[in-house]
Structures are given as structure tokens and as C-alpha cells.
Image (cartoon, rainbow, N blue to C red; front, side, top):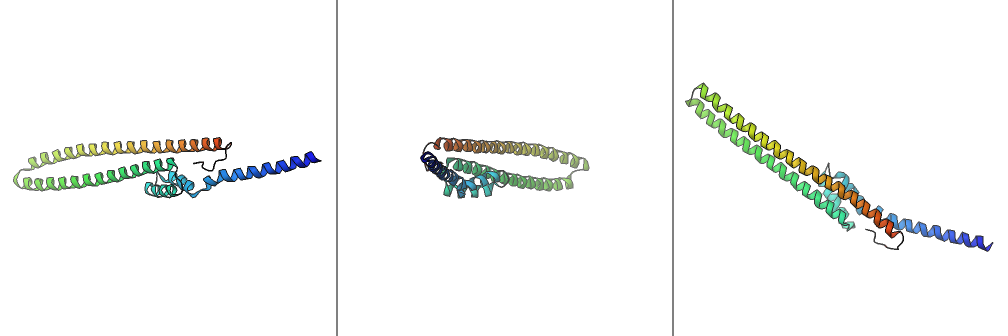
Length: 181
């Protein structure tokens, strides 16, 4: 009878201890910083500005290095995207100005020259414009490849972060440690 009651008490203590350990393990996962980190990872590809905001919130609650790295990568990606848009707008303005200048020159030369001269002058700007369009497309493709490589690095960092967190959790099962991150 004593053995049974002793086993019952020990079982109850073990269950209570397991419940306490589970709550300690679950607490960092339920932390709002961690949930914001995951939300930021989901938004990086579609809405990089919102992902940056989620990472900022996550960094306030959690000092994890992976959050900071992902924030920096997303920030670089966002800046590159803005630069690319600005360059695209500047090129469009320059192209428009060049076209305006060429049309002005053509109007002046049209008044002086014959129809044959007009045809030859129109073909040259078209060829130059086609060459500029090819250069613009090549630069755009290059930027797109750079963004894709950044996204791949982000995904790799996220996977590595989860692996590191799992290792920490596994190694801390034997130790009583409050700081798992």
C-alpha cells in the first residue's frame, strides 16, 4: 500500500513538473515578438514595408539576432527596390526629354530638308531608342536577379533560425534556463 501511494505521489509530482516545463517552453513561442517575426517573414516577398514594421515590433520584445538580420536584409531589399523605381523614373524622364529634343530638331530639319532627309533622320532615333530599351531591360533583369538572391538568403536565414531555436530547446530540456533565445 505504501509503494502504491509513493508511486502515485511521485507520478503526480512528475506530471506537475512536466506541465511547468511545458509552460516555460511554450512561453517564448507565444511571445508577441516571435509572432511578429513570423508575420514579417510571411510579408517580406509581398509587402516589404509592412515586413519591416513587423520586424521592428519583434525587435522591441525580443533581442534575437535572426530578427535583426532579417530586418537588415528586408531593409536593403526595400531600399534597392526604391532606388530601382527612381532610376526607372529618371530614365523615362530622360527618354522623354530626348524624344522632345529630337522631335524639335526634326521639326526644324523638316522645314529645311526634303522628305528623303526626314525618313533617314527618323530611322536613326528609332535605332538609338531600341538600343536604350535593351540596356534598360538588361539592367532591370539584373536588379530582379539580385532581389531573388536576397529573398533566397532570407529564406535560408529563416530556416537556420528555426534549426538554431530547436537545438537550443533540445539542449535546454536538461537544464533549467529561462533564456532560450
